Amino acid sequence: MVRYSSALRCSACEQRAILERAVAAKLVAESHQALVLYDCPVGNGVHVRNPGFEKSPTA
Picture (cartoon, helix red, strand yellow):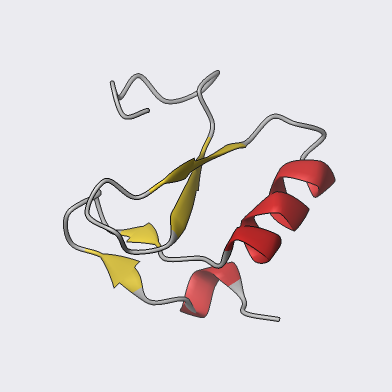
């Protein structure tokens, strides 16, 4: 499994980790749904974010 901290970063999405859907889904589950996953708008896999913490308009 890819470690979040060592994952490639997306220059189009605020340097968010570029993840496979299964990895992102596991992070969401382990966070008790505090994180949400969304498809990268430029096609770089999926990303996760914490909408309760972040004020960014992303996804």
